[in-house]
Image (cartoon, rainbow, N blue to C red; front, side, top):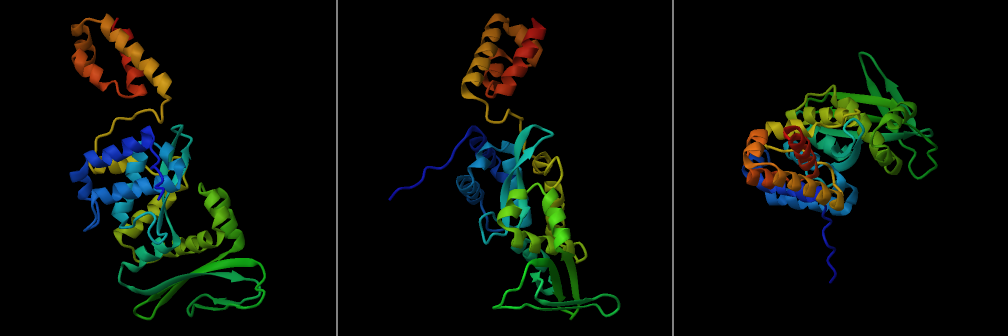
Length: 307
C-alpha cells in the first residue's frame, strides 16, 4: 500500500513546531476532549489536500487553527470550516484565512438554543415564490422540482424560533453577484456558487439573530477575510500568550545559507564584547539565534553599524 508522503516546507514545519511547543497554552483554547496532536494532524492533512497552504506565513497557519478551536469547528469535518490561502498585499506574503462554510454558520446559529431550525434555499425563475413584508411578514416558496426551473434569480435564508417565530432574509441574484465579485475567495465562488450564495444569505440573516460568542467571532472573521489585510493572526497568538519571531516566508535555501555565512563571518571579525554590547548577547547566543534569513539580515545591519 502506497502512503503519500506529507507535504513539508519551512513554513509548515515552523507552524507545527509552534503548536507543539505551545501545548499547554493551546490546550486552554481547544474544545473539551480535543488534543494538540489532533489539531496538528488536522493542519498537516489540510496542507496535504491543498499544497498552497504550505507556503502560508507560519503564524497565520497557527492563528487559523486557534480560530477554528475557538469556534469549536474542525477543518475537513462535514465541510463546516475551511483553511484558505490568501495573498496579503499589504504585508507582501501569503496568509491562511479561516472561512466558515454554510453548514458551519448554521451550526453556530443553532447553538443559542433559541432556534428549532435554520435553512437557506436557492430560488429559480420558474419557482413559485412570494414574499410579504411588514406587520405580517410571510415567505412562500414552492420549487418546481422535476422540471426546468429556469435561471437562478435569488436566494433566501430563514430561521425558525422555538417560540414559533420566523425571521428571513431574501437576496437577489444581482446582490449575490456583487458580493461574489468583491470577495477575496473568488475561486471558491467559481466552483461552489450555490453553496456560497446560501451561505451569504445565512450570514446576512445571522446579523439579526441572537448570537453566541462563537457566531459573533465567525462573522468578524468573515468580514476580516474580505478586507485587504485579512484576519489578524498576530492578535490571537498574543491573546494565547504564544511568543513568535517573524521570519521571512519560505526563504530560498541557497540565499539563506549565503546570508548566514556573511553574518557568521562578521561575528568572527568582531570582539566578543562588541557583540555583547550590540545585541545584549554573547557571540554563542547570537550564533544560536541566526536561524532565519530575516534574523541574519538584521544581524548584518546591526554588526555593520557597530563596526
